[in-house]
Image (cartoon, rainbow, N blue to C red):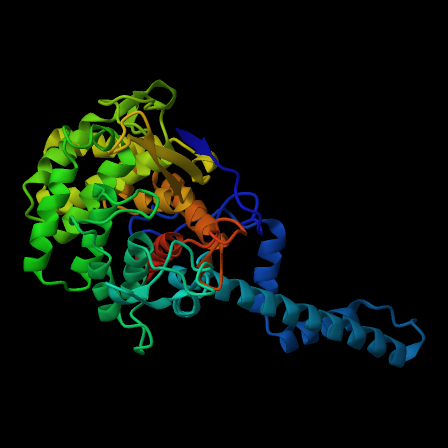
Amino acid sequence: MLRQRVRPPGPRTGGGTPPRARGAASPAAPDSPPLSTPSRLLTWLGRLGAPAAAFAVFQTLLGILPEQLAGEVARYSVAATAGVGAGAVVWLAAALLHARAAVGAQPASHASSPTGPLPELMDGAYEALRRGLSVIDVPGRGPLTGWPHSLAESDPPVHPTAFGTAYGLHLLLDIAPLDGRVRAGEVAETLWRLRLPGGGWAARSQGGGARPEVTAIVLGALARAGADPRLLESEVRSCEVLLDSQHDASGLANTYVVTNVLRGLLRAAPGSAALAGLRDVLVNGATADPLRGNHRCWGAALATGRGNPAPSAVHTARAVVTLDRAARVLGEDERQRAVREEGLRWLLAGGVPDLENCQEEVRRPGREDPLHQELLSVRHFGAAWVARALMTDGAGRVAADGVGVVAWQSQLSAAVARVHGMQRGGVWRWDDGPMGHPVWMAYQGLSVLRRHALMVHRP
């Protein structure tokens, strides 16, 4: 079940036409329009020096004013006053031309960016990680150093979760702080201590059995932190078994679950034999949308499974990002590339509603009693996923063949501005409750702004 969610209260990212992003592929600038009459006059005046213009006006008036104008003093006074006025006008015109030239010559890379000062946001995110860190000693598990689900949930310290700690480790590795007040090694060790007795990891709402989507997230974080590949190997095999049609048919039919596992295994085990089959599941799960040119896209449920595969921007963006990463590691054939690019075209045919956050419920039969269901509530950062999809390598080329590079840049800029607008000081807010500052949202938000800053940077 997928529910669209209204944006949380906060300042709007601005009305009207969103600012253009500056990608690598920029269209040629059109010829400048002809200058209007006032602009030509300003140009002519600006080319004259202020003293020269003043003297020219003075001499001209002195020659044409009648000699009967109350004597020579009056004639010289009128001419001098007009000359000074003309000089001032020319000086102002020259200053205006200089200012216009300075603005026009300003490099695009130095123009204002909707992302704001990225170093300050990264510093703010690190301080939030420090404040939200839970350090507790659990009998039988030892000291735990990590995070629960939300950065606002740790006062007093609460038990770290595998989900929150994995995303906290991802965020810490992205920030790469200059001090050791939060040590990545201790956080990684905590993830190993949170491993379930039978192997694998699960969200705290999922009970005592491992689930593939959480296990893959943890494995990806541990691999980024430099975990021993020999220790990861057995857990990777367990994760591959968890996402099997006989073991977890519900998970294998869910876009969120499949994309999570694929991205996690691509980080932790790029040579895994399960990757090709999982990608086929995702590619085959796309569905055509007649409302957007029959381009293939994705819904909360894969089209090959049971459930409603109604088109969803956030699930399409998740699939595009995942398939792009798989193409980097595994390569891709023509069909796989065509489906990935159609997902991009579907997103490029959308608009502002695609950037809204949404929430879904992943339901599975209970382990002990199939008549009861396990329920996992999943929240999706819509603008962040759309921005990530629009920043994949092929997005600019696909846009150039369709809606155009300018439209792509405009959509990307709007998505990045929405991402930036949902944070304060490097902390992203879902709502105002104790669970309203998710660790995963901070990681996704900051990674989007960081990627965009690198994309638009011009040394």
